[in-house]
Image (cartoon, rainbow, N blue to C red; front, side, top):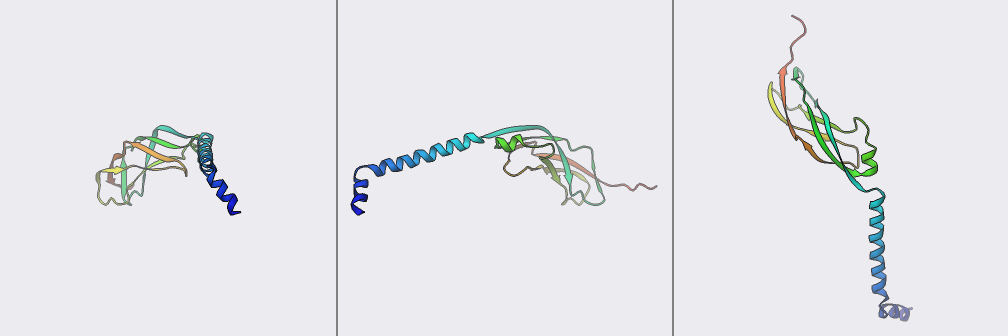
Length: 134
């Protein structure tokens, strides 16, 4: 058994074996990436929604839309449904009325990555809510 192993190593077969393993791995990686390649997609007008608006406050005006660039496997990007990507601003820390610059957060399905959000911050105006009775 040892003589056979020694013959295998001496004849240069080990180099060929390692080279074959490397080539097999490279081919596997290439085929796998071609089966479901990474692609990008731009969502040009995703509406921004306010979350955690403090009690007694109201958002003045609309928050507008943002452009979101996504990346992920083609199967996941093509399977995105309406509403699967959400853009939000969290207003839970605000205690006073006024104008605030807030960062836009984006929720995406598993396997999809956010490449960019434009604009990344939006201006939000909060005022105290008025009662309906006079």
